[in-house]
Length: 69
Image 1 (cartoon, rainbow, N blue to C red):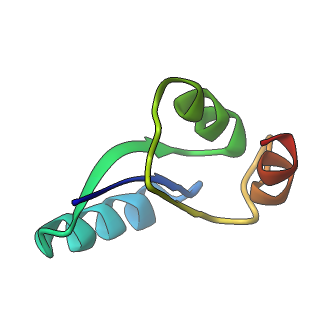
Image 2: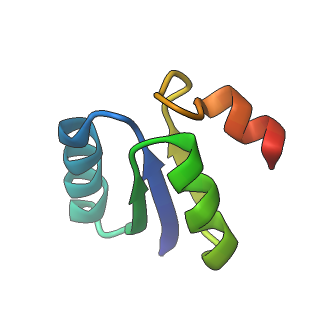
């Protein structure tokens, strides 16, 4: 099973992806973030196998979050 974090500023997108991926049985969503700052915070305390991230989010976008990593 792969652990993942979903980062998107739209709650409905995060929830839909989470439900879809977890229903397959191959993935466990260990965190969700509404912007890049929340994502970076989650990554400090978690070690996901995958991150699904929107590139355009408020505050800290996906590109900036990648650069900070």
